Length: 132
Length: 132
DNA sequence: TTCGCTAACGATAATCGTTATCATTATTAT
DNA sequence: ATAATAATGATAACGATTATCGTTAGCGAA
Image (cartoon, rainbow over all chains, first blue to last red):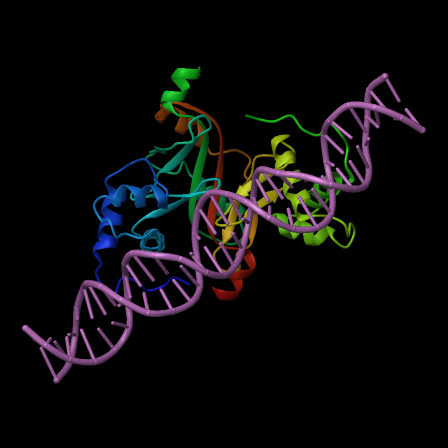
């Protein structure tokens, strides 16, 4: 089902990937759109969506399925996320391995596991200190 | 932010919870709607959505954030899910613990972790046998 | 270098899942 | 039974995403 993409180069796609890779706040498509709009005034939101799915298909970015709106991540190395109950932000959680999660899951599941994602919920550093 | 609900009893809510708890295919709101429609012809899709969020707030069911459409699960005990790349189905993966995932995450994350969800991707039993 | 093909674009309409509104119905305490 | 109001059904509204379509631009061949 994976499509073949990016037969041609485009400034918009470059800008979108650059933008995503230079930030760590896991922006939504709209966040990226508004972030690039000053630099590329003619940019269309449709183009952002189009390229984000394309880049995802090409394995260059990751889509984070948080409630409601999709967020994106330019870091394709294995890591997890925490969605803050208080501020709604999404934060990185880096662990040097998956704690044997896939291994264990493969043992108990009669199918084939090719990947996984983990979304923690709780309070980010700032909100935890602030609210207690 | 958790709301107080269910001050009154309703046949619709009972039916929705019953339906969800008696099946293991992690249906969408619409799936439940069509499943109950023959039994409760006057049922409205809005009522299904309303009660699903209410039941979720009450901790009686779980919402699974898969791509696009939300799915629901009547089993509130800790377990994980696999989304089949081939057929699109969502399947249970039961493990007797979290493999130390939360423990490890708490060590490396400067905030407070209160919960987590894991979504594996791959092939379900049937699709794995069929396609290889 | 220009030409032609068509991928990618921008603008916007359409779609889809979900939520809000509101008049009506039904549950429950009195 | 009655009154108060939670919950309902119908449907409009909403927000995120995708599809459409005419135009633009990347790139290989002439």
